[in-house]
Each structure stands twice: as C-alpha cells, then as structure tokens.
Image (cartoon, rainbow, N blue to C red; front, side, top):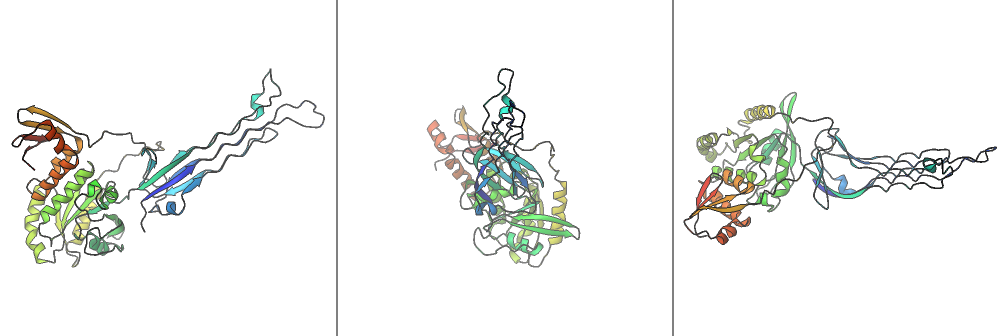
Length: 423
C-alpha cells in the first residue's frame, strides 16, 4: 500500500547533568572543583534520500527519540554528546506541527537536511561556578530536557509530468504502455487509488518521471472522495499532461471540468505548462472528434496532440513534446545556505467581500472565487452549474441574498459579469 501521510512523535535527547566533584589526589589536601559538564543531547535530523518513495516506515514505528547526553565526570571531563537521530524521508516531504498545522520544513532535494528538534544543552559542572569568593562550589546544573513534538509528514510526489484527466481517460493504460509501471486498470471512477510513478524512457539515455494522478471527479478540489489527497501530488510536477477521453460523449466539457478543478485547488496549477492529449484514436468517435477538439484547444492557448495507447499511434511524438516542455521549465534557484524552508501563513483564499457598486450592480471580490471565475468555461452548462454550486458552498449566494440582491441584478466577479436569477 502507498503511504503518503504519517503522524509521528519526536523527542530530541536530554542534556547530560553537570557533576559536582573535587580533586582527590594523594598529597593534595585542598583540591579544587573538577566536576565536568554534561554532554548535549542528540538532535532530530531529517535527511532526503532519493531512493525512498513512500512514508511506509513511519507507519510501522511512530515514536522516535535521539540519545541523551552523557553526564559530566570527574577531572573536568565533559560527558559525550548524545548521538543524533537521522530520519530519512523521500524527496517532496512536508513536515508540519501536528497541533497547529504550521509548516516546519519542506524537503525536496537529495541530501537536503534539516535539524527539526535540537537536543537539550548539557548542564554545567561545578568547575564552572568557581570564583574568587567561592573556591569550592557545591553547585552544578542538570541537563536541559530535550524538545518533543508530534508532527505530521506529508509526501508530495516529485515527478516531471503529472497525468490528469477524468476517470477512464486512459491515464493508467498510457503509463503501463510507456513505462514499467503496473497500475491497476478498471472501468470505474478513482480506479487508481494511489499515485503511480513511472519512469518513461524517451531515448537510450533519456528518461522522464510520470505521476499518474487518480481520476478527478466533480468536487475533488473540495475534498470529495479521494480528490484532495491526490491533487497535491500535481503541485510539484513541471508539466501537466491532460488526457481527454476520445471515446467520451463531450471531450471539451471533460477538459473544462478538469481545468476548473485545478483552478479551484491552487493558483499555481493553472499556470503550469499543459499538453492536452486526445486519447483512444483507434476508435471512430475519437477520429471524428479530433479536428474539432484540436481547433478548440489551440484556440485556448494549449498545445495539442492525439494518441492511441493501444496501437501506440502518436506516442513517440508525445514523449518528445513532453521532454521539450519539461526542459523549458527553469529549475528553481536553491540557496545552499538555507537549511530549512519555512512558509509563512498567507491570506485566507476563501475570504470574500461583497459591495454594491451602483443600483443593481454588485461586486464580489476574493482570491479563490475570482480564480475559479476566470477558469470557468461559460459555454458549458456543466461548468456553469458547478460554478453556481461553488457560490453556494462558499456562502456567497447567501451573502448576496442577505445584502439585498434581486433577480436581474448584475454580479461582477473578476472580469466576469453575471446576471442574477432565481435559483
């Protein structure tokens, strides 16, 4: 089973106690203080191992503790430092405070490390407290307790290409043909219950990592079914490969629904390069749809290709185009001195405001609703009805009615102007 979330308990090591001791040597009657300091406790360190691809080991073991520092000893000997506990995680692991949800670390690159919990400082021995007025101090410090916390680990797969499309669009079939991945293939929604990674060979020495994201259904971005758990895996892909079922009843409507879900989930997804691919070209229906779909997709500013995974028609051309698009995406700049990335809280995207601009004209402002309005295809009844349901679920419909809107009034959301009517 694929594990992409885990909740674990962490505790760094306690510092060792400082020691109270005095020199006791033959012929030395008044030996001074010689109690050594305690050693520092071990840290909890997370390190990225690119050979790991799931969080399964954190389901088998939940509690993790670094070693304590050793107590100080006689003859001014400092106790040994506790050993650090190094926990290996796959690339793409987010670490959050379990209680607050605060993002503590975002680990993406092979070998990247972060000290998540520092060990307690070792206590000072009595030799540290000697002074001109107190030459025989009988005082020392106990070691500082280590830090502890419950955290959640969340894995966002890191792949070059994210496959998206409605159920039965042919994602799993395509992945099984172009890579060695063995995804489950069946004819019902959410057939892929876990994201499948496949290494796709473009040329002899060139490969691309594909991530097959489970089929999206309406409401996935709002957490319906399994959608929200898997949508986040698309965030780190460089290119989106959007498959449209050529055997479907209305491929353009399918295309609109998926893009609406992507826009609703996160602003960054709709900005990613997207290659739209009409599948099942071995079927007469797909062949009939192709010229119509190609014209509509290109008109909207997307790249378009058509394929058949069964006959392998167009697959090589598609892989070369994907490689070209992946290579054109600039790599993020990494500061080698940054040990940890901390994301500060951002504004609440669900927040909205309503104001009456003039008689019969209302303005709705909000990050999320304006983004969805901009990504909604108004020529399709399905996406228009979906937009109306989003207005209701976000509380915008009720807020407008409370503000006094009446049928026939104009509602402005972003660049869109909509006429209000009875539901």
